[in-house]
Image 1 (cartoon, rainbow, N blue to C red):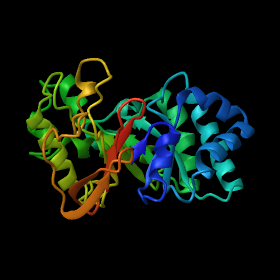
Image 2: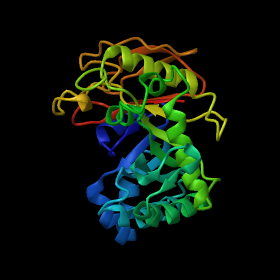
Image 3: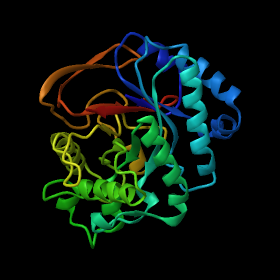
Image 4: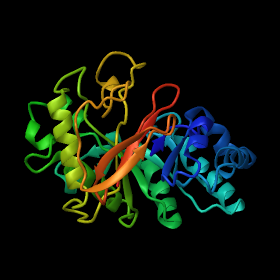
Amino acid sequence: MRIFNPNHDVLEALRGSNIPLIVGVEHKDLQSLASDLSAANNWVQTNIAAYSPSVSFSYIAVGNEIIPGELAQYVLPAIQNIQTALAASGLNIYVSTSIALSVLGSSYPPSAGAFTPEAQNYMEPILKFLATSGSPLLVNVYPYFSYKDNPDQIALSYALFTYKNLFDAMLDATYAAMEKVGEAGVAVVVSESGWPSDGGFAANISNAQTYNQNLINHVGEGTPRRPAPIEAYIFAMFNENQKEEGTERNFGLFYPDKNPVYPITFSASQRLVDPMTSNGFHFRKMEHMKFISYLLFPFLVCFSLL
């Protein structure tokens, strides 16, 4: 599961669940965490140590899609301070950041993938730190938005995995960009991917079901550049009915009333539990996928596929 802030109601609900969790750092906290180790110690004690080990933390995501931008300068020092605070508490949890592919100035062909000069100023030292710490880079990969913005150049079948696939091209362009700054050894986790079922261009149930099902079926294969299983998270568990009208409301696999938007199947039996109600949902789950789910306001949850 992925949550975008350390909401204590969600963390309490996850105690003893053994559900691996990505927890995000809120953007409003980045500057203080970057500049003050005591603030990082307090954040770790309040939001991580107080719930560990009964909550299974996989990664801490320091910022979501803020490179490049005015907050980007705080990402690496905040990562370093949180990592130091975790070590002081005897906690072994990976710390990283989640990026959008807007960090790439070049992405086609994938072998030409490269960071924009502005993004590279931040990405290169972050990747060097991740290489040292062993943490993966968290990458949000959305073929939907690339297709929506370039429908004359990109075939729908390419975006939906039905003929080769745009997902691999986008991910391989990221790998190529990392290699160009000398950090080919850093692992990548796809921290978000999905397709909307309503609210905009090419956003319908058929396309959303096709994309997410094909993503689930594909992640065990890896990409041409890295042919190994991919840890990936589907955005999202629920449609977010308190967002403005449009595609952003409609990435969920479930409606707010918990009825499925469309069926998705996995290859092995697993039970997923809604942590707010303890109601169980049954899925067949693929070996290499996790489900991310985003809870509705005030909680954002993601289904994770691994």
